Length: 188
Ligand code: ADP
Ligand code: 5GP
Image 1: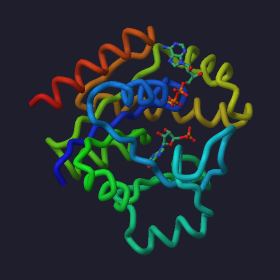
Image 2 (image 1 turned 180 degrees about the horizontal axis):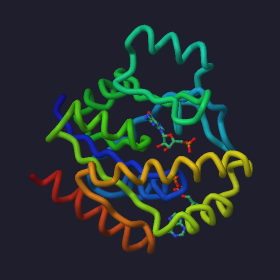
Image 3 (image 1 turned 45 degrees about the vertical axis):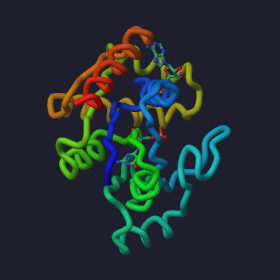
Image 4 (image 1 turned 30 degrees about the vertical axis):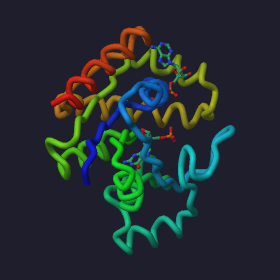
C-alpha cells in the first residue's frame, strides 16, 4: 500500500461528514473509504456512495469471513465496518484514503497503520450544541438523537488518544485547521 490514511472520528452530529466532503474538494488526492453498514439508507443515500448497505446477515457473514479491517456495532443492532477490499480498491489507484468512522474504529485503524495514518478527533463545542445540530439536520428520530447524545459523552473520553483534536465551533475555522494538519502530515 502506497498512500496515507486520514481518519476523522467524532460524536455523531459534530460535523464530520461536512468536513470530509470539504476535504475531498481539496488537492490532497484523497478518496473516501465507503464503509459497509447494516442500517437502512437515510434520505438520498445511495448504495456504494455513502455506504455499502448490507442486511445484518450479510454483514455477519463478512465478519465471519474476515473481510473487515475493523467493524463496530456502533448502535445496538447497527453494524458499521471498513472492508479490506475498500482499502485495496483505493490503494490500487495510488490515492490517499479518508475515513469517516466512529471513535473506536478510528483508533483501531490508527493502531494497525501507525505512522501511515493521521487520526483526527473532531469535537463539538458542547453537548447542547450537538443536540441542536442533530435536531436541525433532521435525519434522525427523537429516539435516535437521544441514543447518539448518550453515546457522545463516552466518545469524548477517547479524544486524548487521537493525534489531533479540532473543535468544530466555527465551521470555516475547523475546515482551515483540518486542512492544515492534513497538509503537514501528507508533506512529511
Ligand atoms: P456528522 O457527520 O459528524 O454526523 P454532519 O456533518 O452531518 O455531522 O453535521 C451535522 C449537522 O451540523 C449538519 O446539519 C451540518 O450542516 C451542521 N454543522 C456542521 N458543522 C457546523 C458548525 N460548525 N456550526 C453549525 N452547524 C454545523
Ligand atoms: P451514520 O449512521 O450517522 O452514518 O454513522 C454513525 C456512526 O458510524 C458515525 O460515527 C460514523 O463515523 C460511524 N461509522 C461509519 N462507518 C464506519 C465504519 O466503517 N467503521 C466504524 N467503526 N464506524 C463507522
